[in-house]
Length: 498
Image (cartoon, rainbow, N blue to C red; front, side, top):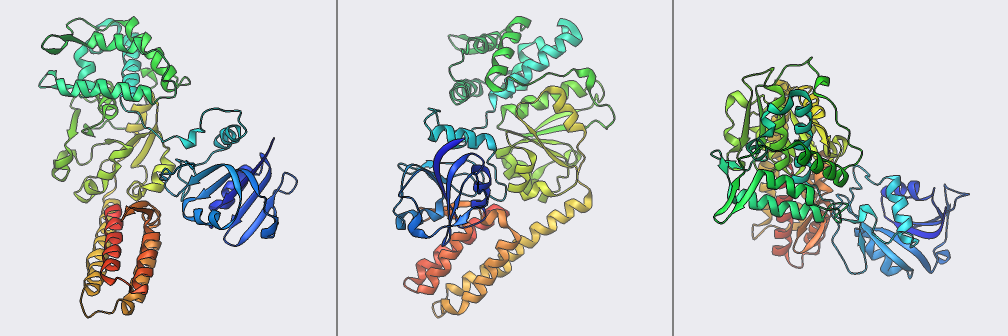
């Protein structure tokens, strides 16, 4: 149990979430919430009120919501560390302030293990920053290579050494590195750079990369004129060594499962869709194609180009789509253009977290899921074939809701802004209408309104930009700038929800 003194400063209910976690581990815990001051001990985890004059002059650390940082300027408390958090987990970096890169609303993504690391760091027992204070990084190439290694080893046990997975072209094609059956030189160089960056940002960058480099050397060799595909087969020991290293680097606890455990109850899809730009989704699609082809000979792999998502061929509109977390942003447009296929997100986040942050994943029972990294080939296959396309009524419901959002923007927001821009319009007269509109947006799109965006070099939640814009209109000091600021806030909101 720690003898540290900690303080939490936040004017909303996230303060209580921090207190719940910290009160089990910290002997002296202080809370500032609006004008309330409370003191918690191990003997009194519910806390008691405290007059301001009884606040300590020094604490070991302060955890503060970024919008409440001004409170610290009004209360003379010194601390060894200051940790800052915000809603989406994307705080700005400031001198002498340690950012917390975890979402805190609507899902409070701080775990007891994070608190253990935090306390150890504050107490000087842990030299490195807590995990939650390091920017989240989602690897793409490393888990793709691990997945392909797992498939190779599984295929070797199932089929002997005659499998297609022995061929370097299968590996390169699975990573999206072939162009017209030959190596794409630029794409391969990008992959090498990506490998170096992901390795350095992994949890064990000091781990030797030699076995993985030997695997790549079995796929591609360097010649005076550039890179070329090697003519010889990939060997079992090389893959086994690379697999062992990648498992240790990414997740030592990953367990392989056998192809014989494949769920055979559900239909096989006719096609597997991905969007260009990800090694992981490309490798996953290749494995699905390989494993399902025997039972579905007509199955296809189809890569969607980012600039042609609105022209998805009708036969593919009910096929499953593999996405990375970053590619979820493309899904609303696909749904609007009639795509009804199931969606599997390959991400370090759980589906519960992703669903909180992306409204589009909440529509259609059984049509969306996520597969946390790393995963095995069999888990991938079973997850995909247990997804179902969206029912027509669910797809239409989503499309109608998106249409309603566009109509709010076109019929209410745009006319309101046009009125404000008229020279003879008094901004104060429109404030009730604007305030009512903003309240409606906060109610219907809470995740978007809590999202941190930057306007005029100020990084705030959209709802805070709205409040500031209203205050600027009320002040009437510079109406033209105030209207421009409000317009920018509405534009940012629309960009998030459309």
